[in-house]
Image (tube, rainbow, N blue to C red; front, top):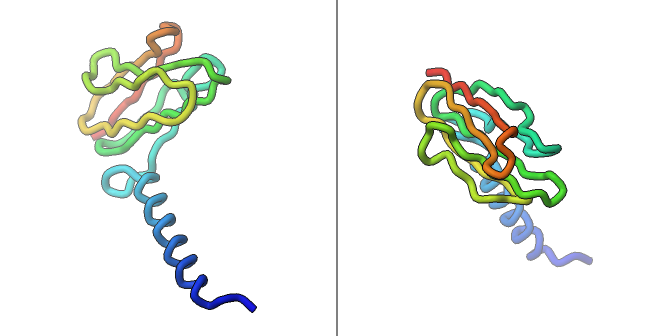
Amino acid sequence: MKKPVLVPALLLAASLTACGGSDAAAGDDDQPVVRVEVKDMRFSPAEITVQEGQTVEWVFDDGGMPHDVVGDDLPGLESELLTSGTYTYTFTEAGEFGYHCTPHPDMTGTVTVEG
């Protein structure tokens, strides 16, 4: 026979986990996060379009090879060198923003932000 006191504890843990996940998956105004894979020595997709206030998440998964995301002309768009994990940035103004990987200058991308 199962102890009924475990059920409320499990439900509470599941609801707290669900709340944390939904906040991490949405940018401002509940806009979905746009994901860019950092894999196979490239950003994929290399060109994306988002709305003002939307968040971009770069997912690093290139077999342990270190990469970063550094804005060409956008102060603040700058991750650490990462071999795994994610980096996020919320774009708050319209424009076209180029970025690159410092150790691999041929790795470039562009984020177009619509107002």
